[in-house]
Structure formats: C-alpha cells, structure tokens
Amino acid sequence: METPILIAAKNGVTEMVEKILELFPTALYDVDSKEKNIVLLAAEKKQTNLYQLLLKKSHLKRESEFGKVDIYWNSVLHLAARFGNSKPWRISGPALQMQWEVKWFEYVKTSMGANFFFRFNKKSKTAEDIFTESHARLFRDAVEWVSMTSQTCSLVATFIATVSFSTVTTIPGGIKEGSGSPVLADQPAFDVYAVSSLFALCFSMTSMFIFLSILLSHYEQKDFAIELPWKLLLGLTSLFVSTVSMMVSFCAGHFFMLKYKLGSVALPVYAMTCLPVAYFVVTKFPLYISLISGNFNKVPVQSTDTDPL
Image (cartoon, rainbow, N blue to C red; front, side):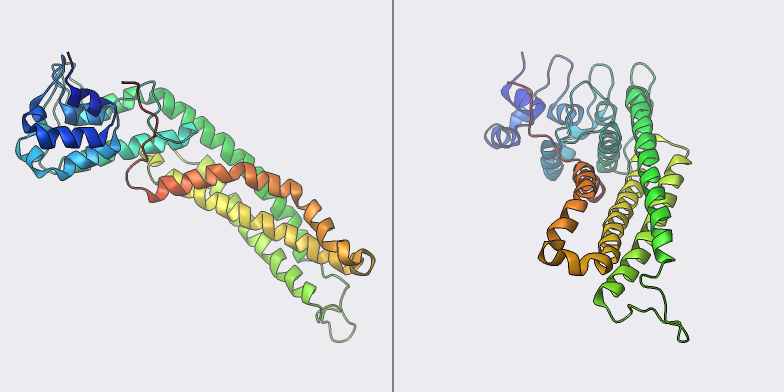
C-alpha cells in the first residue's frame, strides 16, 4: 500500500510532500511496491515543481536518495527518460512536446552531477537507450510536423518575397524628368511605402531561407531542444514582420490613388483589407507564444492537470 507522501509525490502535490517531510522526516525513506521513492516518482511522473523542491533539500543528496534504483535497477535518469501516454506538459504539437521531453531529460541528467554513474538496468539498457526507444513515435511525428510547418511557411514567405520584389522596384507616380527623383518623394506616405517594401522583401527572404534550412536539416532528437525551436521562432518572427510590412506597403501605395476619393473612410477600408492577414497571424500566434516559452524556459512548464487521487 502506498503511503501519503508517495501518493502526493506521484501527483505532484508539492506542498503536501514538503509538509510531510517537515513533520515526519522518516517518510523520506518510503518506497512503493517497486521500491520507488519520492525522487524516482517525481522524475518518472515529470513533476518538475516537486523535483526542483527536492533538489533544494541538501539532505536528500546527502542521504543518496537521488542515487536509489527500483527493483528493475532503473535510476532517476532511466525513469525521466520514459515517455508515457499522459501529457505532463501544458503545450500542444509533437515538436514542442519533443522539445520539452528532451529538455526534461537533460535537466535531470545535469542535476545528477558530473560524478553520477550512468548504469544499466536489468534489461541492459542505459537511460539514453530508453529515451530513444520510448520517444521514437513522438520523434517521427515531430519531424513530420516540423517539415509540414516549414513547407507551408516557406510557401507564404516565397509569395511575400515575390510581391515585395515587384513593389520595391516600382516607384509610385514615376520619376521627374531631368532630376530622376521620385515625383511623390515629398509625400509622407512615400517614405512609408519605400521602407515597408524593403522590410517586407528582406524579412520574407530571411524567413524563406530559415525554413529552407530546416527542411534540409538532418533531424536528431537532441536538435529539438534548442536548434530547431530557435530556427522556427526566428522564421516565424521574420514571416510575421514581412507580412505586416507587405500590408503596410500595399496600403501606403494604394493611398496615393484613393486618398481624395475615400476621405475619412480610408482607414476602415484598409483595416478590412488586412483581415485575412490578421487571421493568419492570429492562427499562428499560439504557436509563436509556445515557441517563446519553450526557448526561454530551462525547465519544462508543468501542466496544472494531475492524476486523480
């Protein structure tokens, strides 16, 4: 029968574990039927908050609780390497899920220190072997997702680059004979048009090359920790900037033709024309936020959902 501290550890109830250890220090040595202590359970269930708390308890390392193994000789790192059916991370998409899994495994490995002995379990497997095997399907799904996303975004970036190139090489109103300067150079909208067109071209080309480099990458599981997520973040950032710049360029160039006809309704009309682009940005914005969270958080963000007690 499992003790209260083991149940609390399995479900990530950090406050309860901390209180039990405070009142009953000997609960530290409680193990379940498979000889898993609270440290092993926290690593296996990916309870990041609890695991960080246990790391701060210096007496746990002094008592070698982090070096314990279960009846199958699985260490903390072996259990952290497993991938189950549950979704401990508050994140969607196989690529981002893979990122959190790699980061969690690397975090636990780092927390064990340089002197940690990388042992084999009873099946003669290391923690790296278990990680590779248990994440094989997620890895395939992540590679497929990254490839499809990169193809879609590179197509959009190519379209924007094509349109932007034509706008950059076009001067609204033509040029003055003799001087060769633009006729509308004194208009504020002309500067907006010129700068936004250049921004759209530069950032769309940048986005296109970034996504092309992703498509040509030789994917490995460790790449999902830093390299691929950063490339996706930079690619999406460039794509968003180029999209907005293209629409600003379009509105500024169109303003020369209709500014006297539209009058006060010019702004609402231009806002309506930007709705399709706004829809694209909104649909991709959750992915963008998830990438920012994944790239700047050292430890995975644990989901608030826990298994029922």
